Image 1 (spheres, protein in one colour):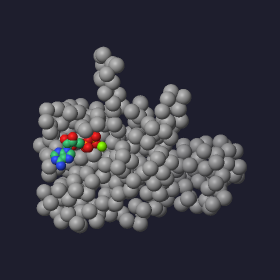
Image 2 (tube, protein in one colour):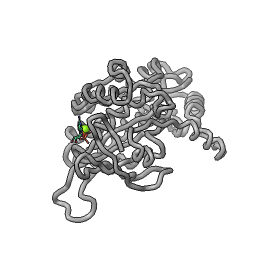
Image 3 (cartoon, helix red, strand yellow):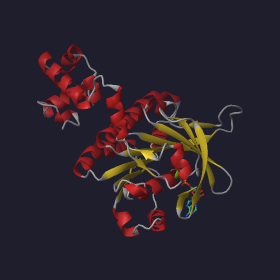
Length: 312
Ligand code: ADP
Ligand code: MG
């Protein structure tokens, strides 16, 4: 099955190099290219360009589909419970596969706790709200805690040691490292299709630190966008859930409008998926607000963060 450019027929190291250099680094970019452009840019015969464009389109299943076909595809989307019925309800049943879910909110709002909880819950059998799957956890802030995993696992009757064994975590040290990790995920997941959840907590912190300042904004947006699209692709190809977190800062200098601003700027808006804002409320109560989902109504629910995890 064709999953990357490397899998297209006749694309070896040499041609792969030419394509990448010409800016064609994803199946999508090839699928939507014109044969003329691709041929000129990569210095390949027109017939080769036509062939790989067709293959890329077939692989991505880019064609008109009947609404019935689309409905059947949507029916295959699976959901992972968050531990809170209210939050699941807001999400239309839970965290969806084939989609990227962005959690954004202030420091301490509970983004990391939700990521931990879903990494545990994905291991539950389907009848209990899981996918009997494993989780990959990309930790950029050093906030992954096995204590929290164990507490959450025990609370729902799972063996803590087994649950720890089914979560693979890696600390990403900078943007380049974070990007490289996601680029390698394809191979890791292809070898182990029991991986049903990818977490990137947080997806924006390194980008913010390394590309601060107005003059770096364009480069940051471009790199972050590509990174996010790669994650969305993995969700779609492997029918798995992707959760990314995005810290927003309180803006004391803002007197009206939303006093928090998403750190990724507007970048994340251009990536398909579900966006949920988490806000602090009284004590351990939190408010989740559906910001923009293609098929879900906007709305707000309350949930809590407890010692045993996310609950109503
Ligand atoms: P974010 O990732 O959005 O910055 P976190 O997910 O780290 O926020 O949430 C931190 C909050 O989670 C803490 O302020 C606390 O309220 C709650 N929390 C963390 N650990 C526990 C625990 N063991 N028991 C109860 N609540 C906890
Ligand atoms: Mg966090």
